[in-house]
Length: 216
Image (cartoon, rainbow, N blue to C red; front, side):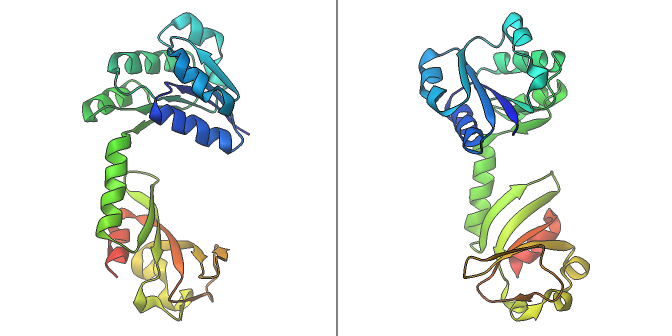
C-alpha cells in the first residue's frame, strides 16, 4: 500500500484521489473549499480543509512520508508554483503537478516537479490517436519517446508465431501481453505463441516504431 497527498479537489484532483483510493492506497485530500473536501471525504482515508500555500500546514503533515504528492491546482498558477516549491523544500519524494498551459508546465518543471500533467492536452492527444487509428484501444505514455499501446493484431501477423514475426528485431517493439477473444490474457508470451485474428496485443516500444505498427 502506498500513500498519496492530493492538493486541490476540483474535477482532476477528485478523480485522482478516488482512483487511488479505489486501488486501496491511503489518500489525504486537501482543499480550501470545505464543500469539495466534504464531497471527497467518504472516498479517501483523510480529507482536510486547509491552504497549502501555508508553510506551517505543510510542515506539519510530513510531506516526505508520502509516496507522491499531487498538485492538482491548475488554474491558480501562482498557488500551484508556490506549493510545488514548498513541497520540494519539505522533502517530497515525487511531485506530480497539473499545468494550465505549456508555459506553466515549463515553470513547474524548472522548480522541481517530477511529472507534469496537462489533462486537456493529454486527453485530446489520446482521443486524436484513437480516432486516427481505430485499431488502437489504449495508449500510455511512459516517457517522451516510449509508449505502451493495446492494438488489434495486424492482419499480416495472423496465424504466425512470435518467433516467426520476431517483433523486437524486425519492428523494434516488444509484445508484453496478448488478450484473446475468450478474454484470456497471456502475460509475457513465449516465442511459440501464435497470434490470432481476434487477439489484442499489448505492445511497448519507441513511438516512432509504434507508428509503423499502427499502419499495419
